[in-house]
Length: 545
Image 1 (cartoon, rainbow, N blue to C red):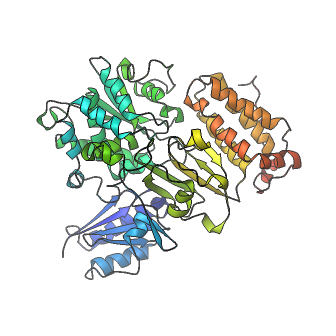
Image 2 (image 1 turned 180 degrees about the vertical axis):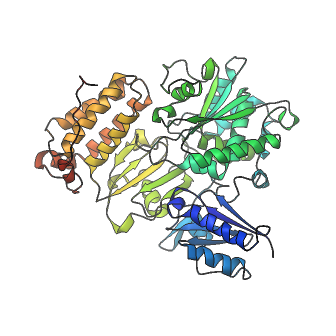
Image 3 (image 1 turned 45 degrees about the horizontal axis):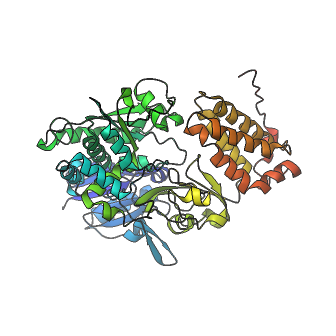
């Protein structure tokens, strides 16, 4: 019997469809038939957006199946693996996985960051190396640090965490800062609701992140790095730990890397789930063992970061772009995306969209294409009502803005934020007031309480929205919500409070008619808020806080 490798896609959507159960079931079948020496059953990252079911890839046959039940798994084992690799009716084409089919046309992803995700076993460094892994590091170590920084600057790579600050410029500031010690930090906290791209990148291709961080360390003169990751990301943590161990074993981490004299150590630090820890100075405070609360800026991390030393802070997706840029060149990278926002972006498709998951496409893609070409449209044939782009700190828009191109300029030009790349789709069964309340409750809960505009502003906004949702809204409530949002945005200490106006103003302004129906007619057009009248709601005053 010739060796077979079975890769099972284990991402957020697949897990809901039973991926881990199918994985263990197939391993049991292999073990019970004494075929462990011939058949490897491994989990891999997301293979793309696809219809309901779990994608199973069989190598070297290059066959893909959609699995929906134990019986499907059993059929694959008995009929494909045991009976001479017979192709089953569960097969789907590669195009259906790597892109989506609409009107018999295939819309392909452009995978730069995700090029290895779903293609390799993330627990085996050998498979990463076989796909040019650590070649960029070898090339970078033959360059001068200034040359690396210049190449990253020329590429136009900007931070993929949401802020979009030029990566090369941040590295240059850190490189020029004089210090006996410097640090490279990866922000893998990913606290934005609906965002799961970084988790799937780490679980599907951990070595790309490690390689990017090592290159950054060499470029800026840092000898130590930390990956700050959400404590709830159990699989990501275990996969990263194993990848780091392997990188040390192969000489890519530690002393005298590849005989060049450059040394770099990398460790993992776990976060406790605070949304505010996604702000870079709060993240630094947390690594230092303090509460995750933002620092006053300036000074900024490139000159005074971790333990007061110059520090680079980038997120997972940003670092993973770096090896691709170094290996292929800045000009190659600029072929994708737009002039001001080169490269690709990994988007998380969530909500009432047919195909949930992550998709990587060039910057400048329209909201329409993300939802209808890659996401397969709105579930159950329902009417699209609204979209939130960029996560909870992003903008709420209506169908009239479907053709807005998403890049780092889209907010300034069209009032539509790119943010962390979340596309939350809501159909006509959802209520704008209820969604606004959900978002503001999240902000209230996640406020660190350090400054009054955020701490009290979010509380007041929640109380107003609860009142409206109960059918007790007042005519002045919309103006009051706007004032609360504007004051928080102008006077809050950090980005959490400063971002409150983005979702709150956008949903009030774009769906004002629906808010007014709640207030003036005491009705919820979607029928969502009616039940709230029967529920006990809190009454909080400033006095008892």
